Length: 140
Image (cartoon, rainbow, N blue to C red; front, side, top):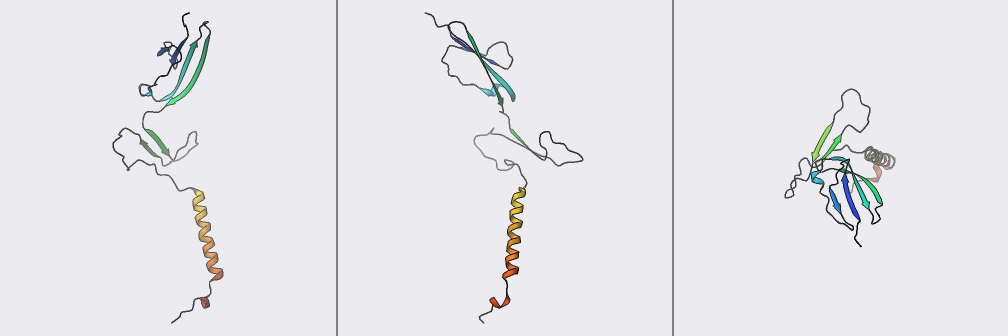
């Protein structure tokens, strides 16, 4: 009996499959040939009886440099002038690591400032309440 099982793999809305296999299959999917952005992988499997099963897997390709933006969030309402910092870094060179520009500067979180002010405030309170000149007499 001949095995008529097939697996066809489509990318996005392309009517022509980019791969046609007989199951089971294991392959390497090279995303470097696909532009960055959202895509869909559609897998159509046909059984020996000719019954088709379809599975669609959405995914996102990001082969280009990572882009980080500080100062503007998605769907944010803004007015006047706003400072924006944009940084793009990727992994094009495998032999060297460049420290300059590899990190995007971010503001210190508000909870760190609150913790620091609380600590300094408690230290001042403790110093004012318990400092007495007669406790610190000189031995000379």
